[in-house]
Length: 112
Image (cartoon, rainbow, N blue to C red; front, side):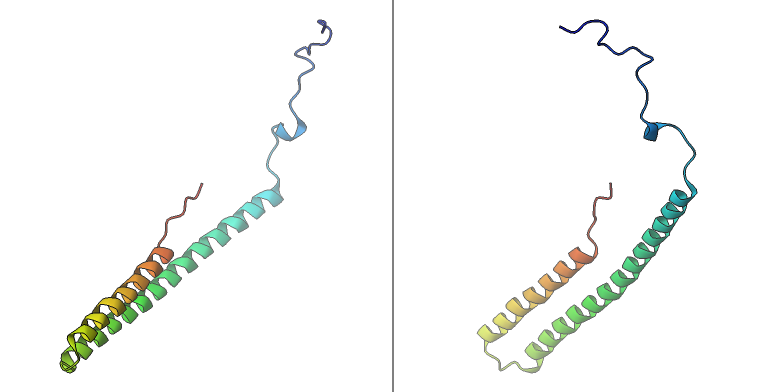
């Protein structure tokens, strides 16, 4: 059975050395500043890349849709089933590609 001598007294309880309050180390502060600057540069680069890729994918989709429209209008002798297949499957694929790229480029990650 434990005795009263086994229980710690308030003078026995001490904070660990790493929890003691001391001024922050200058090298740690420099490292934090560098990491902060790198994070800002990375976000700026991401924004520039998003602008570039979003413009490119929009142009691709617009050109593709115009090409499909041109093919339908310019060549009315194409059978109706072929026209429906061209309009349906290829347009759906291109718009799906646009959606997938847009979702990848503009996703919101949880930064906790």
